[in-house]
Image 1 (cartoon, rainbow, N blue to C red):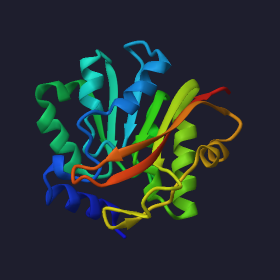
Image 2: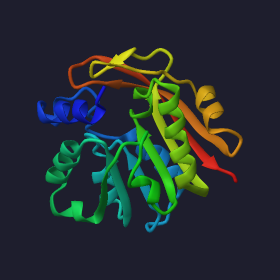
Image 3: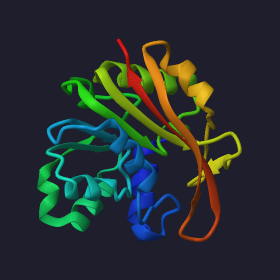
Length: 207
């Protein structure tokens, strides 16, 4: 499947606030970011920004090196329209996490933040490419936040099959260089009222 086309179509044909993964408040992600105690100059990479309101909150909190990446140019344009002139404070990158052309050349980052992207990669090759990029970009002592459908979660989202995770599965994929600092289950309520169980995890790179 052409994922760029799929996600461009999804964002083009829907009101962002009606999308099944839209959050009015990204409180679970903010909760974990606050635990990291970043300086305002920290480089915060948000992958698969999609319909996120987290970028808005990071700008309000005064972070100066925010990076927003997505495979969908339409998703990014919609976020920029919503945020307005403050979107100029963000470095925007249109790229594919499993076949990166631009992200691969980024300087190392203090945070890799992913809510609801990883679980769309079902093929082992795509998963390997994702974690390879993550490990290339996260600096020593840097942090990783991954929020994905947990083992009780839905088996499909946006018409696509998903690969569900537990904390232990993410620990195995990240390896001994990353220590899990926090994890919790969280039930997200979609705009339409359906519930989606997630696992939220916070890791720190130790080497």
